[in-house]
Image (tube, rainbow, N blue to C red; front, side, top):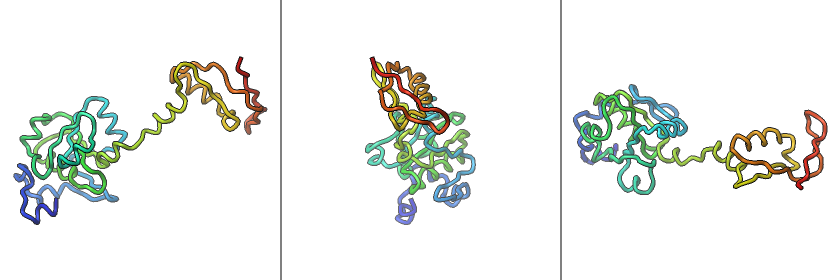
Length: 201
């Protein structure tokens, strides 16, 4: 964006607010921005909002957007398309919505959030991590996938017998039917006597 300004390229139709004015809402912190009037969120909060049907507006250029984006997101290039009118065609002034871009190294969604606040939008979420953070794996999902099996599950190993009750509870909560535990040698847990696994029939 700074390069575009130096080159004299207009910042979309949103030039009704000069940079010197909306920069007052931007505060740098640990490589990210805080935007006065907007709520900064991480990838877990972003996913929760997405699950609720909150709209996402990606302010990257079309090339970046096409290469990958949050499912269902709208694209308004901050340099050429973002304006009060174009944003109003997507969300209402009192409607929740999320603004994102390339992530930590990209200030565009912070700029867009500051503009949106100054345009009078009241429920702006600034997704600082952007699409790179969105792609970050959900560790809870990966744990569930390790436990879950198609049909009947088989749980247990010589290394995990002490955590067998926890594994069984995890399998039960995932709807997995546990048919047996593999017959490894008895394993002594630090918290109690040896555990003797049930042999498969």
